[in-house]
Image 1 (tube, one colour):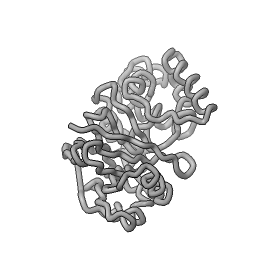
Image 2: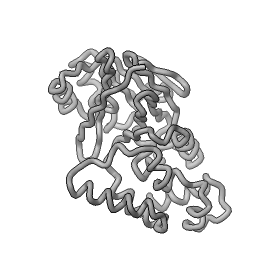
Image 3: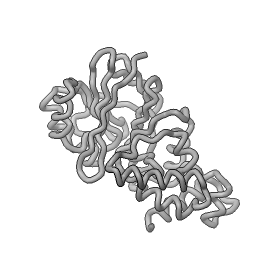
Image 4: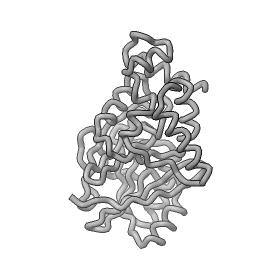
Amino acid sequence: MAELDIHQIPVLSDNYVYLARCRATGMTAVVDPAVAAPVLAEAERLGWTITHILNTHHHGDHVGGNKEIMAATGCTVVGPRADRERIPGISVEVDEGDVYRLGECEAKVFFVPGHTRGHIAYWFADSNALFCGDTLFALGCGRLFEGTPEQMWGSLSKLRGLPPETRVYCAHEYTQANARFALSVDGDNAQLKARAAEIDETRAAGRPTVPSTLGVELATNPFLRADDPALAAAVGRQGGDAVEVFAEVRHRKDVF
C-alpha cells in the first residue's frame, strides 16, 4: 500500500487541520477543516489538489470549512454515518470496521463515541497515522459532551490497541495544559515528568507537540491507564473498575 504525506495546519486558537496526500496518486484529503481559507492557501502553496474531506465529528471547529472547500474544489466529503445529518455536504458515510480508500492509501474506520455520539477515527496503518479528532489528545481525551464514561473508555480501549508506533494526529494543541493536569493525578510517573518538561521546552520554542505516538501516550496519558491499579489508588478509587477510574479522572480534569 502507498503511504501518506501529512501536512499540519494550525488554525484558530489551538486547532490543527491536516492535509493527507496519497503519494501514489496525489489524492489529498483535508481532515477536519475548521476553516477554509488557510487550508486552501496551504494546498495551493504545496501544489496539492484537494479531493476529499475526512470529518471525525460534527463540531463547528471540525466541519466549519466544509462548504467553502467543497465549493472551491468539488471534493468528496466523508464522515460518520451516525452523524450524517450534522456533517455539511457529506456524501460518503462510514462506520465501525469500514475501510475507506484515499487513492491507494487505506484507512480503517473506528466508531469512537463519547465526545459526541457519532465520533469516528481514521487509522492509516501503512502510514502509522491515526486521525482521532477530539477522542484522544496528547496527554488527554475529549470532554463527554454527548456520551458516557463507559462509551469513552470503550472508544479509547479500541485506539490503545493500535501499534505503539502509531502517530496520534489529534485536532488540538492542548498538550501543555493536559500535562499539568496529568501530573496532578500521576505525579510519581517518571516518564510523565520527563515528558512534561520536554513539552514546556517545545512550546516555549513555538513548536507543536502534536503528533505524539501511541506508545508515549500509553506510558503517560492517564486517560489510557484507567485500568492501572496505581492510578486507581492515586484518585481514590482502589479496587474500582476501569470505567469508574476513568470517570473520576475525567471529572477531575473537567474541574481542574
